[in-house]
Length: 275
Image 1 (cartoon, one colour):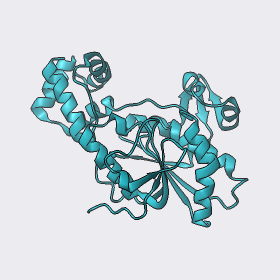
Image 2 (cartoon, rainbow, N blue to C red):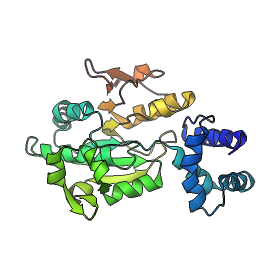
Image 3 (cartoon, rainbow, N blue to C red):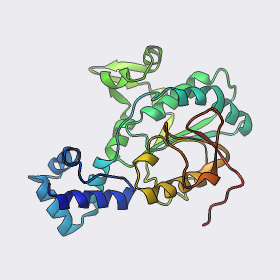
Image 4 (cartoon, rainbow, N blue to C red):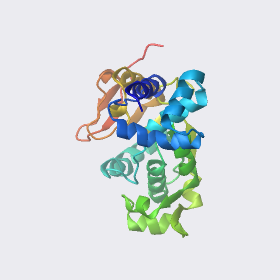
């Protein structure tokens, strides 16, 4: 790919999804987009980029953006946020809701491991939280990632990354060379394709939002837009989980860090975002 083609990819990703793509990383771009070119029937990456310039086809453009979006995902990634969710956040929100459903959103969930990790925690905590009702949502910008998430099938390598053996035995079944998550857990999650820097005014309100390792992968102007969207979507008493070393710089007034809990923020109910 020419430098001009790589620059076009970077511009496209920034404009459509706020993604930061370094045009100098030629190997990363070419390796990610090779599968798109083959799937779309192009003989080369150069042919695909020429077609994009000539036709500006929306489906092809989104295919390129989705291919460049981060896909890193693992069950119970980093562990600490999930322990906080289990031990502190979930009981607190359940008490506040007083029998009303607790709404949880795993944003940018990639292949679904984060959303299913939350579902397994909810299922395992039911006996301690009588009357627990949960509405759990998973979203990503990538259609193929969501298709994998909805299937509930994972490789041996994927279940070995972060998933305790007791949960593998309890919530998965072997299916050939794959592991299938139980229908009970799979059916707990509703899936939706969402562009996090688009208009999310119709997304509703959530009590808990996991949006981890997303802000750090965006171009600077889109970081504030994402935080504004999250502030609108988070209930006044809600909690936001970001990735390790991520913060709310640029929109500090909307969130308050929870002391001693890195990456965990509470909604500031007094903060108002201009329409």
